[in-house]
Image (cartoon, rainbow, N blue to C red; front, side, top):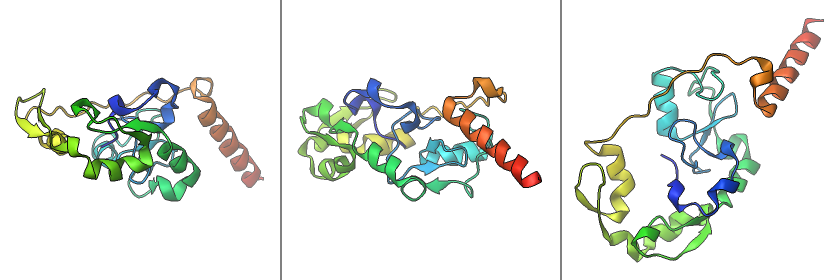
Amino acid sequence: MGFDNECIVNIQSLAGEYFCPVCRLLVYPSEALQSQCTHLYCKPCLTYVVSTTQACPYDGYLVTEADSKLLVESNKSLAETIGKVIVHCLFHRSGCTWQGPLSECTAHCSGCAFGNSPVVCNRCGIQIIHRQVQEHAQNCPERQLPVIRPRLPLRQEQLPFRSRLKLQLRLHLEKIQAN
């Protein structure tokens, strides 16, 4: 599960590649997995894709757990960049005013007094403490699973620039190897 988008300061300035294509949440750089097509996934979302369509929602490429690597191993600079994203405390709706880099948020939240504030689940109505919201979201009786619709393969001119460049490079390398 990714980071709560409502806690991101200036979310509109962030690149789309920082977000999981399934849950659409900002990935935690220390937990994110990068697929062979370079898209980033939360672990539960990657498992969901592998067990259903096996197709990346962005580009339709095959997604497997075996070909996916931890982001901190496959692209350390991207992991560091995402870790520098400025966020609010996960408990800011309960009154915490802390802001800082995503990489420091877990440490802050683990000791934040506002995490013990009572909240009510807006899906099932059960009262829980704020610190248990993410865990409850995974087990809520009213939880809805994401729907993934595989896209048809795109023509080369429809691909995002980075994917188009990678495709051109791959085709060029195949041509060189064939000769």
